[in-house]
Image 1 (tube, rainbow, N blue to C red):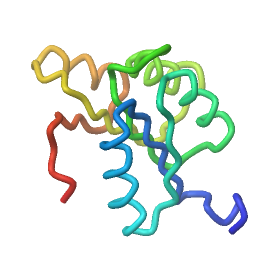
Image 2: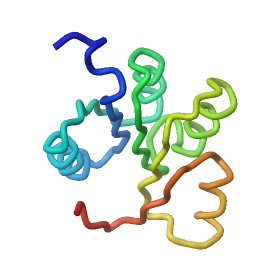
Image 3: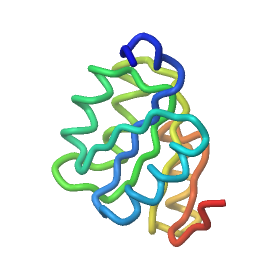
Length: 115
């Protein structure tokens, strides 16, 4: 399948935990999405620029570049309105508010139900 035929269907999962990445890939693939993975913030930036995914699922506590920095970069520098779903162990109200201020469209706390 060519890269152009996947436009609008590519999800980038940025998560350093391989088990969570695999779980998300299984569920999203069943729904018809092409899933691309990144294990740290630096790799995420490279893949966002190269692939222009339709959705970004973003852990906040990442090696190299934090999820907060990625979200801010997507919204401010790239001026992208791609949906960002933050997937994190940060559970406080302050963290959630900060996530939305940084451009999150949704904020999901770990552990979560894939359903």
